[in-house]
Length: 181
Image (cartoon, rainbow, N blue to C red; front, side, top):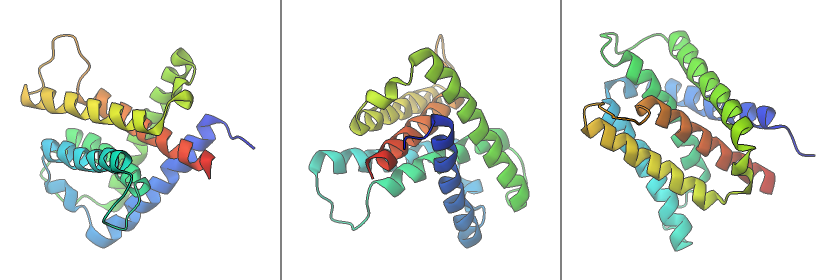
């Protein structure tokens, strides 16, 4: 039985958040030391690996692409948190505060997803996962250019809008995968 997009989105975000919280227990907020540009590069590494594995059809490291999509969701949310918090001196905020920020940005991504799904009539459902990967990479290259331009844009959306799109495209890939299994 096919679920509605909102429920599917919530299920994927819940699974991503569970992994995020488990890693917080293992590592704490070590990511707080990263500059926003470093987070963009971390997401790029994950998306590039997915694309390479999709293209090559084989892997040498026994790790599937799906955890990479989860990592993209989590690192994009972390990047949004860092955009707001980077200048804060508190490098080790308490977990409840971090979790609240995670929920805030996941909810904002969800809201944007519904708005865009309305206008685009859920076109992503007819896309290939490889195309979703390519769009994530394109969004990352846009972010890198905006970062290199010190945040200046002439007519384009800012870095945060691209991170929200990255979250949603990664969630879409994970939804499509869940529907295949």
